[in-house]
Length: 131
Image (cartoon, rainbow, N blue to C red; front, top):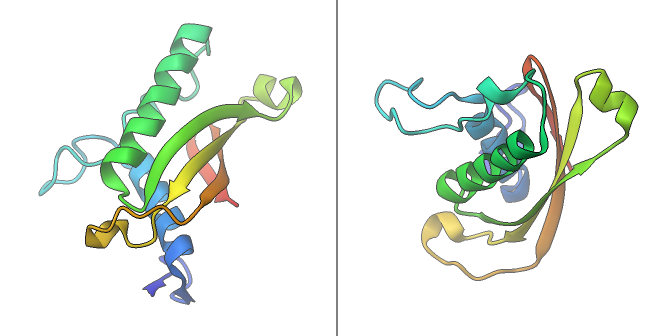
């Protein structure tokens, strides 16, 4: 059990892991004083011209940050979803497929299934994480 950081409502383990991903991806590396290495290096890439090479870097940075800081997930795949019009408007939806390890934060790496969620990002940062 955990608490939603916006509403204070009780949330389940999976929702807590999704909330954790949002925190990880919206925190710049070096931003936390007591844990400088925490976060993801993806925010500076948002809003830039997305070339195939830069998108490859973006995908690797997303996967690495989730794998490093959220032990309940192990990233399997990161793909772009959505249409050309949304991309032209500066909004990208990224589909992320992960191995779900509900007790990973306790040291138990048993996979209990594959889950997918979407990350919608724009020039201002991470907008939303949805299942």
